[in-house]
Length: 164
Image (cartoon, rainbow, N blue to C red; front, top):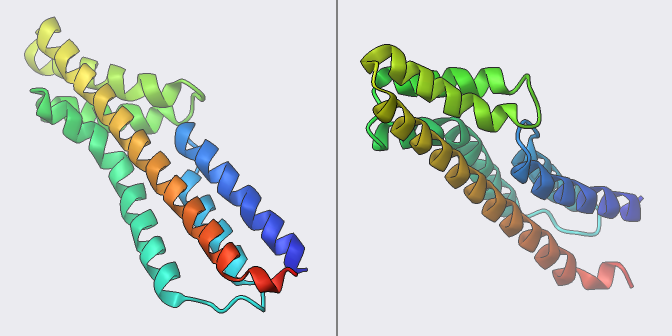
């Protein structure tokens, strides 16, 4: 049973990294699930601090994943219409994988700004900010999933005697 939990946890970690790169896949929660599965092995002592802190980080980053593209739009001069367009495009884009998650916020910000200001240059700038925000949030998710993988390996090797 221990080997099953170990392999399932490791595959969750790998899926979490891929899910952090690909839109609409729950990468970070699956990575955290992999860490949790490792702690389900009876011989490995549970560290509630590690589980609690990593869960908090995963929840915060998962929420920020929906906020950062809108902030990017706002930073590049977008109005409330551009931010709302980004958020609506983000949700609609979830239904059109794999590129909908990337194109949706961009088009949403662009259309929102066109409705607000009827200025194509401003709309394009706000849409570019949305795209940069999406790239930033993806980068953050990948880094956090790699940190979770590091924690997984650290716990595994710290309990090396369990396996041999």
